[in-house]
Image (tube, rainbow, N blue to C red):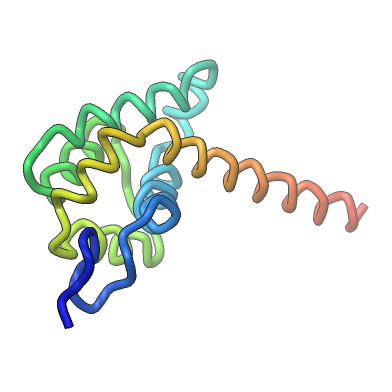
Length: 129
């Protein structure tokens, strides 16, 4: 059985949710907090623009190299493995096309998930007061 378009052998389908969860969320977490504070007014716009421009390459590992250098991203925990697996999954064209064409949607998904986690954290902190 052949993998479907946008799907790597042995991996699930390559969709917006997977890219946001397994690639962009770890990238966002890896952006240094000093950088986020310094550019707080437009950090999400910068993140989006850097994702889009770094995606103008032929290979996903090149995208990963560009974006980590531009934003000073460092990974922690299992994030590096998760990102590398998706970037090295053999579906470069589909991944890069989605990163170029659907950047706003993908970053909005990351932002919404990030805000939800913040709200959950605040609720937990309030419960302990």
